[in-house]
Length: 89
Image (tube, rainbow, N blue to C red; front, side, top):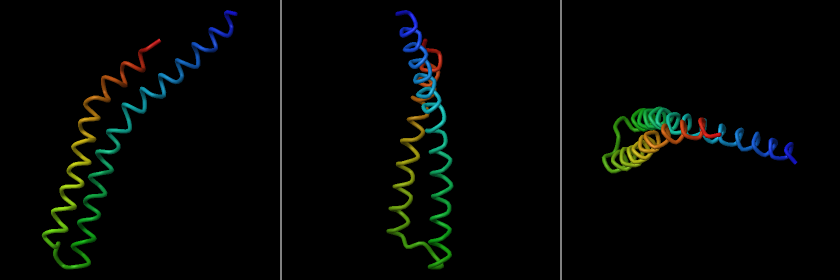
C-alpha cells in the first residue's frame, strides 16, 4: 500500500519538475528566437527588394512585436510559476 503511494509521489515530483522547467525555459527561448527570426525576415526582405515595402514592414513589425510582448509577459508569469512547480512536493 505504501509503495504505490511513494510511486505516485515520485511521478508527481517528476511531473512538477518538468512543468517547472518548461515554465522557466520556454518563454525565455521564445523571446530570443522571436528576435532572431524577426531580424532574419527583415534582412531577407531588404536583400531581395532593396527596401522594405511600408505595408509589409508594418505587418511584420506588429506581428513580431506582439509575439515578443506575449513572450515577455509569459516570462514574467513563468519565472514565479516555474519556481513554484520546482519547489512543490
